[in-house]
Length: 253
Image (tube, rainbow, N blue to C red; front, side, top):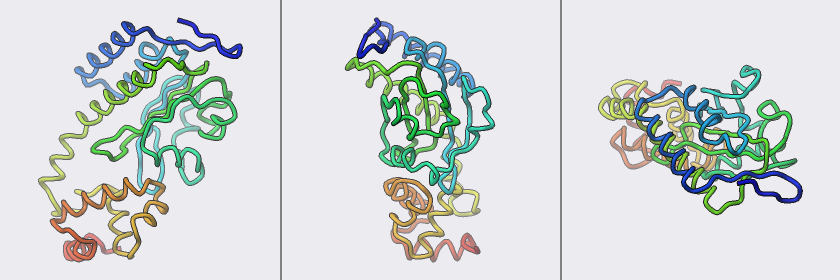
Protein backbone atom coordinates (compact mmCIF):
# COMPACT_ATOMS: atom_id res chain seq x y z
CA UNK A 1 0.00 0.00 0.00
CA UNK A 2 1.30 3.48 -0.95
CA UNK A 3 0.68 6.37 1.42
CA UNK A 4 0.94 10.00 0.35
CA UNK A 5 1.97 12.66 2.83
CA UNK A 6 3.07 16.19 1.95
CA UNK A 7 3.70 15.10 -1.59
CA UNK A 8 6.11 12.38 -0.53
CA UNK A 9 5.74 8.65 -1.07
CA UNK A 10 5.73 6.28 1.87
CA UNK A 11 5.21 2.54 1.56
CA UNK A 12 3.80 0.16 4.16
CA UNK A 13 3.65 -3.62 4.38
CA UNK A 14 0.36 -5.43 4.93
CA UNK A 15 0.12 -7.69 7.98
CA UNK A 16 0.21 -11.04 6.10
CA UNK A 17 3.21 -9.83 4.14
CA UNK A 18 5.05 -8.81 7.33
CA UNK A 19 4.47 -12.29 8.75
CA UNK A 20 5.81 -13.88 5.57
CA UNK A 21 8.91 -11.70 5.65
CA UNK A 22 9.63 -12.48 9.29
CA UNK A 23 9.10 -16.17 8.58
CA UNK A 24 11.54 -15.95 5.68
CA UNK A 25 14.15 -14.30 7.89
CA UNK A 26 13.63 -16.86 10.68
CA UNK A 27 13.93 -19.75 8.24
CA UNK A 28 17.10 -18.25 6.83
CA UNK A 29 18.66 -18.16 10.30
CA UNK A 30 18.35 -21.94 10.60
CA UNK A 31 21.07 -22.21 7.95
CA UNK A 32 23.31 -19.93 10.04
CA UNK A 33 24.03 -17.69 7.05
CA UNK A 34 26.94 -15.31 6.86
CA UNK A 35 26.29 -11.66 7.63
CA UNK A 36 26.85 -10.81 3.96
CA UNK A 37 23.90 -13.03 3.07
CA UNK A 38 21.74 -11.43 5.75
CA UNK A 39 22.46 -7.85 4.72
CA UNK A 40 21.53 -8.76 1.15
CA UNK A 41 18.38 -10.49 2.36
CA UNK A 42 17.36 -7.46 4.40
CA UNK A 43 17.70 -5.14 1.41
CA UNK A 44 16.18 -7.36 -1.28
CA UNK A 45 13.48 -9.35 0.53
CA UNK A 46 12.71 -7.98 3.99
CA UNK A 47 12.69 -4.20 3.43
CA UNK A 48 12.49 -4.05 -0.35
CA UNK A 49 8.95 -2.64 -0.37
CA UNK A 50 10.18 0.24 1.78
CA UNK A 51 12.72 1.10 -0.94
CA UNK A 52 15.71 0.09 1.16
CA UNK A 53 18.88 1.55 -0.37
CA UNK A 54 21.72 0.54 1.92
CA UNK A 55 22.24 -1.94 4.75
CA UNK A 56 25.32 -1.61 6.92
CA UNK A 57 26.35 -3.80 9.82
CA UNK A 58 29.09 -2.64 12.17
CA UNK A 59 30.84 -4.44 15.00
CA UNK A 60 31.37 -2.42 18.17
CA UNK A 61 35.06 -2.22 18.92
CA UNK A 62 37.08 -0.90 21.84
CA UNK A 63 37.63 2.82 22.36
CA UNK A 64 34.30 3.81 20.86
CA UNK A 65 34.70 2.73 17.24
CA UNK A 66 32.40 0.88 14.85
CA UNK A 67 34.09 -1.44 12.36
CA UNK A 68 32.23 -2.42 9.19
CA UNK A 69 31.33 -6.13 9.18
CA UNK A 70 29.07 -6.32 6.14
CA UNK A 71 27.14 -4.03 3.83
CA UNK A 72 24.84 -3.95 0.83
CA UNK A 73 24.20 -1.12 -1.60
CA UNK A 74 27.38 0.80 -0.75
CA UNK A 75 29.46 1.82 -3.75
CA UNK A 76 32.76 2.01 -1.86
CA UNK A 77 32.88 0.10 1.42
CA UNK A 78 36.37 1.42 2.16
CA UNK A 79 35.00 4.88 2.95
CA UNK A 80 32.77 3.48 5.69
CA UNK A 81 35.07 0.79 7.08
CA UNK A 82 35.24 2.53 10.46
CA UNK A 83 33.30 5.15 12.43
CA UNK A 84 34.88 6.89 15.40
CA UNK A 85 31.92 7.75 17.59
CA UNK A 86 33.65 10.69 19.25
CA UNK A 87 33.66 12.36 15.83
CA UNK A 88 29.91 11.78 15.41
CA UNK A 89 28.24 12.87 18.68
CA UNK A 90 24.69 12.68 17.26
CA UNK A 91 25.13 9.03 16.32
CA UNK A 92 26.87 8.30 19.62
CA UNK A 93 23.95 9.87 21.48
CA UNK A 94 21.43 7.72 19.62
CA UNK A 95 23.38 4.53 20.35
CA UNK A 96 23.79 5.40 24.02
CA UNK A 97 19.99 5.29 24.42
CA UNK A 98 20.09 1.59 23.55
CA UNK A 99 16.89 1.43 21.52
CA UNK A 100 15.99 1.61 17.85
CA UNK A 101 16.16 5.06 16.24
CA UNK A 102 13.37 5.26 13.72
CA UNK A 103 12.37 7.40 10.78
CA UNK A 104 14.93 10.20 10.82
CA UNK A 105 15.09 12.07 7.53
CA UNK A 106 16.19 15.26 5.81
CA UNK A 107 18.71 17.54 7.52
CA UNK A 108 18.45 15.56 10.75
CA UNK A 109 19.60 12.42 8.92
CA UNK A 110 22.56 14.31 7.47
CA UNK A 111 23.68 15.23 10.98
CA UNK A 112 22.97 11.82 12.45
CA UNK A 113 25.18 9.59 10.30
CA UNK A 114 28.44 10.28 8.44
CA UNK A 115 27.89 11.60 4.93
CA UNK A 116 29.98 8.73 3.59
CA UNK A 117 27.20 6.35 4.68
CA UNK A 118 24.48 8.13 2.79
CA UNK A 119 25.82 11.11 0.80
CA UNK A 120 22.53 11.89 -0.94
CA UNK A 121 19.99 12.32 1.85
CA UNK A 122 16.72 10.96 0.44
CA UNK A 123 14.42 9.16 2.84
CA UNK A 124 14.52 7.70 6.31
CA UNK A 125 16.94 5.68 8.39
CA UNK A 126 16.77 2.95 11.01
CA UNK A 127 19.64 2.64 13.48
CA UNK A 128 19.49 -0.40 15.76
CA UNK A 129 22.03 -1.78 18.23
CA UNK A 130 22.16 -5.58 18.20
CA UNK A 131 22.60 -6.64 21.80
CA UNK A 132 23.80 -9.76 23.55
CA UNK A 133 22.75 -9.77 27.20
CA UNK A 134 21.99 -6.02 26.97
CA UNK A 135 25.49 -5.26 25.67
CA UNK A 136 25.62 -3.79 22.14
CA UNK A 137 27.83 -6.06 20.04
CA UNK A 138 26.86 -4.74 16.62
CA UNK A 139 25.04 -1.80 15.07
CA UNK A 140 22.67 -2.07 12.11
CA UNK A 141 22.02 0.96 9.90
CA UNK A 142 19.47 0.92 7.09
CA UNK A 143 18.71 3.84 4.77
CA UNK A 144 15.68 4.23 2.53
CA UNK A 145 14.72 6.16 -0.59
CA UNK A 146 11.41 7.32 0.90
CA UNK A 147 10.11 8.38 4.34
CA UNK A 148 9.40 5.39 6.54
CA UNK A 149 5.75 4.30 6.93
CA UNK A 150 3.84 5.56 9.94
CA UNK A 151 1.69 2.44 10.13
CA UNK A 152 1.35 1.49 13.86
CA UNK A 153 2.62 -2.00 13.09
CA UNK A 154 5.76 -0.83 11.30
CA UNK A 155 7.89 -0.24 14.38
CA UNK A 156 7.01 -3.65 15.88
CA UNK A 157 7.96 -5.18 12.54
CA UNK A 158 11.39 -3.55 12.68
CA UNK A 159 11.76 -4.62 16.32
CA UNK A 160 10.95 -8.20 15.36
CA UNK A 161 13.59 -8.12 12.61
CA UNK A 162 16.16 -6.79 15.10
CA UNK A 163 15.23 -9.51 17.62
CA UNK A 164 15.81 -12.19 15.00
CA UNK A 165 19.20 -10.72 14.13
CA UNK A 166 20.08 -10.67 17.82
CA UNK A 167 19.19 -14.36 17.88
CA UNK A 168 21.66 -14.89 15.04
CA UNK A 169 24.28 -12.99 17.05
CA UNK A 170 23.64 -15.21 20.06
CA UNK A 171 23.96 -18.31 17.88
CA UNK A 172 27.33 -17.09 16.64
CA UNK A 173 28.76 -16.01 19.99
CA UNK A 174 27.26 -18.57 22.35
CA UNK A 175 30.18 -20.98 22.04
CA UNK A 176 32.73 -18.24 22.67
CA UNK A 177 30.75 -17.00 25.68
CA UNK A 178 30.70 -20.49 27.23
CA UNK A 179 34.41 -20.93 26.61
CA UNK A 180 35.18 -17.60 28.28
CA UNK A 181 33.10 -18.54 31.31
CA UNK A 182 34.98 -21.84 31.66
CA UNK A 183 38.42 -20.32 31.27
CA UNK A 184 37.82 -17.63 33.89
CA UNK A 185 40.93 -15.55 34.48
CA UNK A 186 43.52 -18.12 33.45
CA UNK A 187 44.53 -15.89 30.57
CA UNK A 188 43.90 -12.30 29.55
CA UNK A 189 42.29 -13.35 26.27
CA UNK A 190 39.20 -14.41 28.28
CA UNK A 191 38.40 -10.70 28.50
CA UNK A 192 37.34 -8.66 25.49
CA UNK A 193 39.26 -5.54 24.51
CA UNK A 194 36.43 -3.42 25.89
CA UNK A 195 36.43 -5.25 29.21
CA UNK A 196 40.17 -4.72 29.56
CA UNK A 197 39.70 -0.99 28.93
CA UNK A 198 36.95 -0.91 31.56
CA UNK A 199 39.18 -2.81 33.98
CA UNK A 200 42.01 -0.35 33.45
CA UNK A 201 39.58 2.51 34.03
CA UNK A 202 38.51 0.91 37.31
CA UNK A 203 42.18 0.56 38.27
CA UNK A 204 42.68 4.26 37.57
CA UNK A 205 39.84 5.14 39.92
CA UNK A 206 37.41 6.30 37.24
CA UNK A 207 33.65 6.12 37.69
CA UNK A 208 31.43 4.24 35.25
CA UNK A 209 30.32 7.56 33.81
CA UNK A 210 33.90 8.69 33.22
CA UNK A 211 34.79 5.37 31.59
CA UNK A 212 31.69 5.59 29.40
CA UNK A 213 32.67 9.07 28.24
CA UNK A 214 36.23 7.93 27.51
CA UNK A 215 35.14 4.92 25.45
CA UNK A 216 32.07 6.40 23.77
CA UNK A 217 29.52 3.97 25.24
CA UNK A 218 26.53 4.43 27.52
CA UNK A 219 26.97 4.27 31.27
CA UNK A 220 24.60 1.28 31.28
CA UNK A 221 26.92 -0.61 28.92
CA UNK A 222 29.92 0.06 31.17
CA UNK A 223 27.91 -1.04 34.21
CA UNK A 224 27.07 -4.34 32.51
CA UNK A 225 30.69 -4.88 31.52
CA UNK A 226 31.75 -4.18 35.10
CA UNK A 227 29.35 -6.84 36.36
CA UNK A 228 30.77 -9.30 33.84
CA UNK A 229 34.27 -8.52 35.08
CA UNK A 230 33.19 -9.09 38.68
CA UNK A 231 31.66 -12.44 37.74
CA UNK A 232 34.72 -13.60 35.80
CA UNK A 233 37.09 -12.61 38.60
CA UNK A 234 34.86 -13.93 41.38
CA UNK A 235 34.67 -10.60 43.21
CA UNK A 236 31.99 -8.07 44.13
CA UNK A 237 33.85 -4.78 44.44
CA UNK A 238 36.02 -2.54 42.28
CA UNK A 239 38.94 -2.76 44.72
CA UNK A 240 38.86 -6.56 44.77
CA UNK A 241 38.58 -6.66 40.97
CA UNK A 242 41.77 -4.64 40.65
CA UNK A 243 43.57 -6.71 43.28
CA UNK A 244 42.69 -10.05 41.66
CA UNK A 245 43.49 -8.77 38.17
CA UNK A 246 46.90 -7.54 39.32
CA UNK A 247 47.65 -10.88 40.98
CA UNK A 248 46.73 -12.62 37.72
CA UNK A 249 49.10 -10.34 35.81
CA UNK A 250 46.29 -8.77 33.79
CA UNK A 251 47.09 -5.14 34.62
CA UNK A 252 50.73 -4.87 33.70
CA UNK A 253 50.16 -1.77 31.56
